[in-house]
Image 1 (cartoon, rainbow, N blue to C red):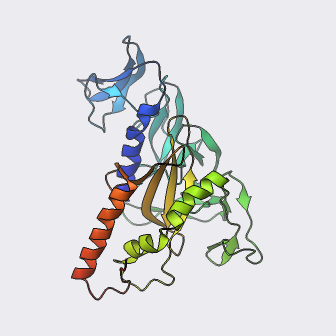
Image 2: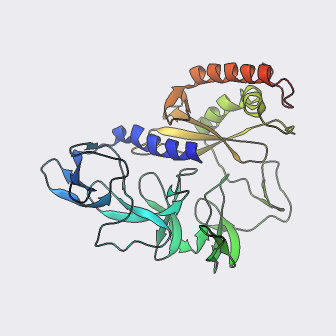
Image 3: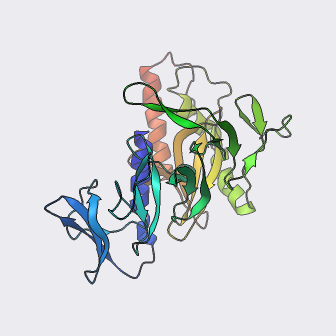
Length: 319
């Protein structure tokens, strides 16, 4: 979870430079209250200094992000339950509130972040566009193209500092927000098994996108050996799946590729591919993008060293 939070923050910052904004924005602070706000280059207040300075920004720091996300909300906006804070565009327009998760704003997973409006959960994309309207009493993050959602469920206290969601009617939605019924039986090898049911394979690709995935698929055995070398139980089968989970947009000129294990659970392997499909990068633990070949060489060396120290590992690394 820590990696995903770091990656989420740093990728947001790293690629905000691609934003075609005409106006430079600056953070400013209210020294008496320790709060932060945003001004434009003419000194006009875009967002009042009423928000928690959780990034420890200083007066005059340039605002690089495409979306302005804060802890809490200004006085004129009521904060929803179970939210981290308010999100604005660069003109100061209020967009939505992010769902509270893991002591912070919900991570963007497979390109979508959970948001809350009128007590209901929906999803927004990297551009700040609400792609699935807030309509569910609870929703999980997306995983392999599906998210579980419920209607009529509610939060119940579970222990001193925790709550859990109970009750209600549960179902699965795709990335269009459509509820998807399970198949009576699998119709193709790629259909997705969730619990005891099968659901249609949720991804579709153009010829260009399939070529991008072929790049990873051709290296699947090596990448799987690297991933499973330190997994404590024997992996059967020892495979990885690669899927494009986000496509280039105005402020993000990359395809985002996730790797999934044999259970179709994300491995933390995230890759970026340039819009022309010619340049490949890995996303490091720090959130930095690294040329794929450079990253791969380091991973091979790390796998070798691990196996030398743990010769009894069940999933052998072999080049």
